Length: 146
Image (cartoon, rainbow, N blue to C red; front, side, top):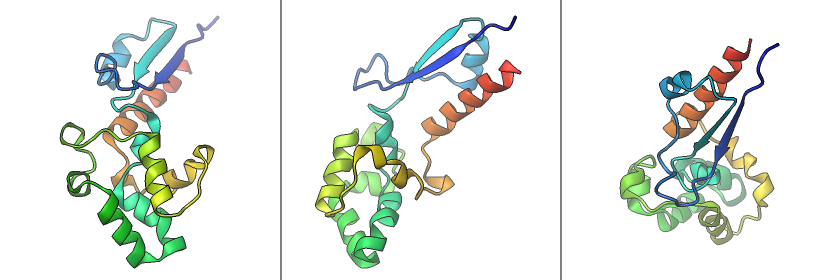
């Protein structure tokens, strides 16, 4: 009888001890014997990975126009994030309230349950490496269940 295993991915909620404890694929392979793996996002919350200037510009542009969307992004995003959206060490840590604030300033109403619509606007180059790693860990776990 196969052993049921589980992977729980949690928000770090700003806890420095938890943040950065996301497992790499190699670490996950070494810990396969446990029934439950708990890993944490490197950033505070899952929603913070949607905070990408080009993604959000692409999301609001159909409602506001390209020029206005560009103005809002340039006004609302710190220049460090515009230059390098993946530089977590030198950028403020965004969270779901940061995204909500951005959308409010853009006068775009979107419930948190609809944030998947923002994710649909992402192109592969805009997906944070933490997300790619977690998806790889999930895939690895599923492949090992066969």
